[in-house]
Amino acid sequence: MKAKLLQALTVLVLLTLVLSGCATPTPTPASVDTTSEPADATSEPVDATSAKPITLVVAAWEEEFTNEQIAAYTALNPTITIERIDPDQTKLAALVAAGTAPDIIRASGSDVPLFVQRGWLMDLSSYFNNSTVLKVDDLVPANSYFVYNDVRYGMLKDWSPDSAFIINKRMAEKAGIQLPPLNSIITYKQAGEWAKLMTVWDGSRLVTAGSEGFGSDVDVQNVARESGGDLYSEDFSQAIIKDNPVVVEYLTWAANMAKDGYTFGPLNPSPDWGVPDLQSGAAASIVMGYWCNAEYAGSADEGVEKPSDFVMYPALSWGGEKVFNTSAGGAGWMISATTQHPDEAWKLFEYYMAGQPAIDRATSGWGVPSLKSQFVYMEAPTEWQQQWLDTVNWELENVDTTARRINPYFSTQTFNNIWYTQVEQYINGEISIEEAISNLDTEVNKAIDDGIAQK
Image 1: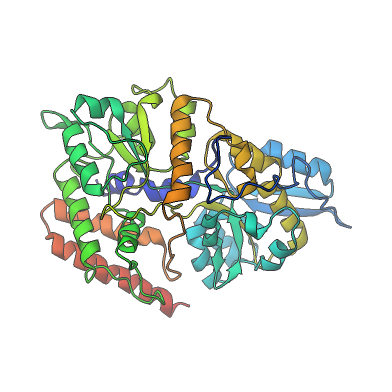
Image 2 (image 1 turned 90 degrees about the vertical axis):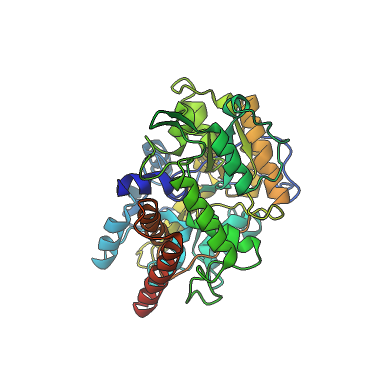
């Protein structure tokens, strides 16, 4: 049961570390400068030949760095052999410890501070400054996840505003809900009231959860930022949870939504995860990223619900005045500090980030390009996908999409694991909500202290 709770409530964080991709050639928001031409690195990489044949090991998922892309690169660079391995963090840690770290590492931007603390990453600042195809002023703001202590360690392969609010308009109408105009600011509590109205039971069986769930570390940090603060102290040595009234109020509300059965929880676990739950009708609304439009488009005939019924609004707001919506961390590439072939690794990095693979990602619908100049490649072949893209463009111009501050001393997933355990105990009547929040504060700060001690 605990595992299912983690599955139901952590989807926001986990998915954004694995997926991303693209959108359409509509007018670009004023906040994004697209006056420049797309980066000059189409399907042909800059020649990366060397005197002797070498092998570059790339830790990346096959669906993100395909065999076809590898073949295209090595055909133009015959002295380069590319070995791709899965980017499993446990395996990565073992390879680093053994002195055999991959040359290129695919991971989340939220991992960067921790990886830097461990000495895993190479400083790429000079490479970016000297590159003719990857220019710092062409990077979208979310790339700041890959900057730590003013040093640039990598970039997003693409990204997504990951806290968008997606609701099934057919279910909303059936529940008597009149949805507001597109791009309206919706509060968490308003979304919660709609979730109550859309929740459907068959006796004791939950047929449709009004919402997938709330309470991820991303949501908590955004709520804290709304009030002018943050989840962490300036030096990251402390998490500010139980002494932050806004955070306490939000966590109490989120836990009670699960306890009362309006979102998935330990007594009513998700049958799958956010994207298929919305498509199957198991959930009426979710907090999710723009990237999942490609998932819905690609499996439009497989679900009970039509993707054209899914409306995307900007990220939810706790206070109703400010909205924060950036990538939860975003997937990107970095180069190992111990690579024996830094120049060759960088040339492959440029090809993947500005060449044909980047253009392919931009047209695929799996996220927003990491380079402003590649927004021209985004596509929205259907009316509902155009609505989603219009919302992304509106958010880029009107809401705060800057990267959240990532604590370098522990994994963001640690926060979620601790909190979801406390929520389970609260729902089962083992502890009060006050105890749950206090325990979260204690255990998160202990994890930070342990991380500082290991520095």
